[in-house]
Image 1 (tube, rainbow, N blue to C red):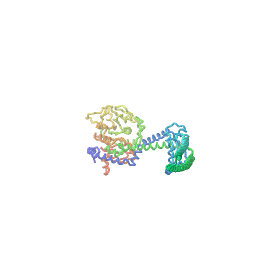
Image 2: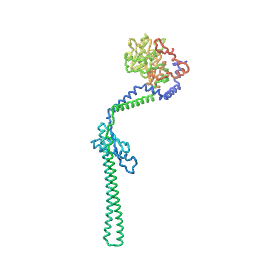
Image 3: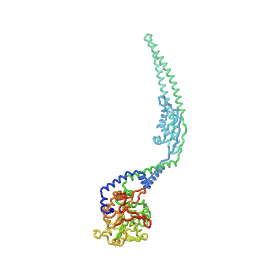
Image 4: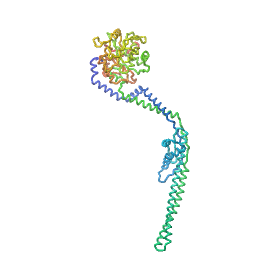
Length: 562
């Protein structure tokens, strides 16, 4: 069985088929993104985000409640006797009454009655007219105060009835005028015929004269009959129309005076706040789910292991860094159970060396804060067991060294929690610092104080993020093996894969990866493709052999044999 760090394995990792497998894995993962487990894990992981957005929505709803004036509603009902014609369809008369009530003319009269100066369109939008039956109609008014709503409803009802009565009387007057014009025309016709008869009667008698008189006397008789008939019909119609108009006007009145509808400020407040909260929840959950769907960041152990090319032997939960500070207070985070688990694994993974100090590099792939805490905690733990520990912080800003109390570049001894640790911080302009493990024949040599500090050390811990633009060859002078620490959801597959390949190409064995912030629902083993094949075949790949428990009860992973 080949070691994970020999040439055959490295060549296998660079085979094109492996990259195709990574692509296939990504595609396969994408097909399961919409599963309930994915949604549940995403929402649980981002609960603070979408809850914050929901609370913002609730606050906006409360602000709208305070900004918008309360709306009071008053309703009045009218009992009407519609003046329907024979040609109108059933139910059309009450719809005509509704249209009149919603007309601008009625609105203008109501505004004048109340002395309002607001826009007519705004006033028209403040009330609605509803047909209840073929004789009952309601007017509902919305206003800022209850008194105004009641006043406007009563004014609208009164002015509508008055306008309706005036309209009916105007129509009746016009009909009377039409009747009078018809009678006047008939009377003029009778008068004209009689005048012609009088003219012919004064002329000498002749046969032609007598024939014309006979004809005009017949016309006069017909005109008089027509006039009498018309006068009788008009009299009947006038009486009928007057009766109908009186019935329509007098039979229409306010059925119920305006009453204020029940109004609850608390209910309105709850409605606005609830709507804001629900809208915030929907928007917040939608945002986090869409971000998760389009994200190329890796979270599952198996996905990280495939990209890294090394097994993820340990994963820890989310580590809250709200209390993280450089120095003594920063190490309070080390009490976190997830940090303690990662530190225990790092301690068990320190390689044995027959000559020189044992060298282990912790490579933070993305976030440096949690790996810095783990490295500082590991250094203090090993120092407490009596080992002489040297910590080399090659990271910009020296976060691990600052946790131990060192700030300035150089080699310095620090005391933290009663333990003495040697801390090394390279100069700012030393981009690729040479390490003490660098062969003497190499072109770059470590400074003598650094070599002297490591010569008597039992353990050299190096904090070294890898930059693809610089490579990782300098890491061979600082460590005999490396462990990559990945934060779930922070790095893409390309970034993780680049870190793993840089370490292998530099000749530094990459023992495994440690995943920080792993989801509780992640049930994957954290094996790369080659390891997964070996596991499926009944054996464990080199570097995965055996978990065992030490005497203090903490989990340990047996390091691979040299």
